[in-house]
Length: 553
Image (cartoon, rainbow, N blue to C red; front, side, top):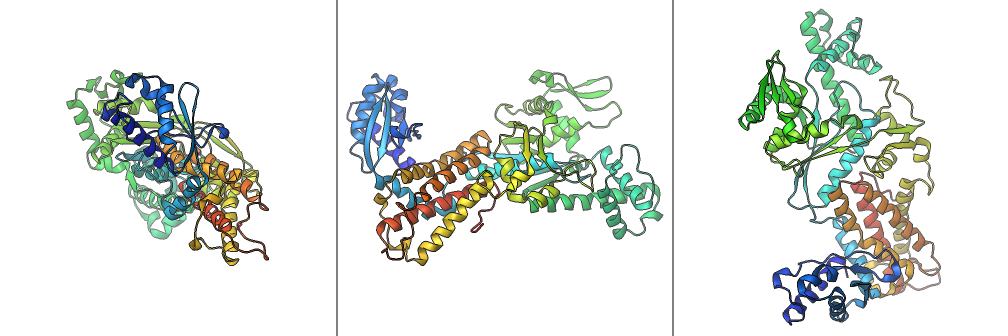
């Protein structure tokens, strides 16, 4: 019996109590589904619910009386072994072994679909993360958002949301001109301008630009800067794409800031916000009255010299997301962007959105990896690609995904690559590879799922604990999506791996593969189903984090 099936049984019991007059509730007050959860203490049963406490007052009865009535009705439900009433009216439900073990079949047959649900169905979300300037390589700060942002996108989709992962390319403004001048200087042997870009990677870009345009040194100065800027930009953006692809991160949309300016979107945004009464003129500049919406001061959109500010671009970009059909907008920003939160929420309010529901700003804290070396190419940063080359994609992604975004991180690189149970990513991946190898050996010895499945054999305490853990996966995925917290999936996988290793280490009692002189029994087959169910859930969970599920380690 799955949690959803138990929920339906509880709803049916409530409906029956209303139908026979026991429960004085309007029929439409009976919930379509009843929330059940795992008790904190295993001896309290497999599932618990407080539905009696929630409905008793409306029904004109006491929670305990309602709970006792529901317990009597549920006791006759096939698959339920016992129902107890605790405290003021909590229901503790214990399933019989066969009903609990049936989950293994459900998981194996569902395969990659197990864990996916509809908790966030109907939500259409634009998820923006990284959005680094295309003037240099991605560094360790971007690495954290790459891991968390991509994992969050996967989890939101698994929970039923429609998600577009978006990278905002900051390719406009004076920084791009300085970048072009820096590339040109490296290409022609000149001096890099003050405030320019000096890393070795600029020399690499300059060499590529010269290969594309051998005539660069002979061009007029303004034209040469433009050519160096555009060609250098194209090569640097291509590198960013390649590095992210190698890290397992893919975007649905690469949105250019330049397009906001070239299309007139910035001017149109100012006009739209003026029509809504939020724009005013002062001292020759154009302002947005964001103080009406909790911002600490009003913001300049167009300077007195006619130049738009970054804030104007931010407003136009927000309106672009709104116009493209994204009611939900999630921004993942670095620790130095705290000041942006109120500004962005004020933009949302000025645009007619609800800043409490239409926009979310997640702030990530800094991360440090001990033992990592500064980039030889960039000089003063730790590059994402160097981290991946040193530690490996899986270890980097998993290690970053298993902590809340708002917690500062101090990770040790050498610990992240250790093949030991103290390394969480190894611990989880090893559990998966173990399930694969158990399955292969079992089949070689004649244990086949196709020969039948009797879940009543899955009655040992370690099997009950393992099955209980497996039931939680869909709830964990939904919760991780609702709370925007991928680390919940990682921590769940570690707990599941622990339960699996405990079950496997009870090998003499709970063998999946029979001894050479032993015949294959229904118990062996039932355990193979359970083993393969664990494999599916571990693989599904690792995929949500963008981490591979190896078959051998």
